[in-house]
Image (tube, rainbow, N blue to C red):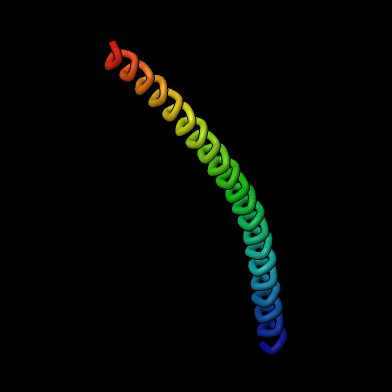
Length: 76
């Protein structure tokens, strides 16, 4: 009975070690994936900021042009 108990304990210990090893692999994979996702989010934020800046500049140009046209119409 003692030998059987030893094997059950050893088997359980090995199963536990395998489970821990598998969890460590999954955690590493999740960390790597999360890092890639965060990098992509950063790139998207940068792109969105640049696009917003471009749109603001374009808006200002259109406003200037509109005010210039209004000024010309008021002068006539």
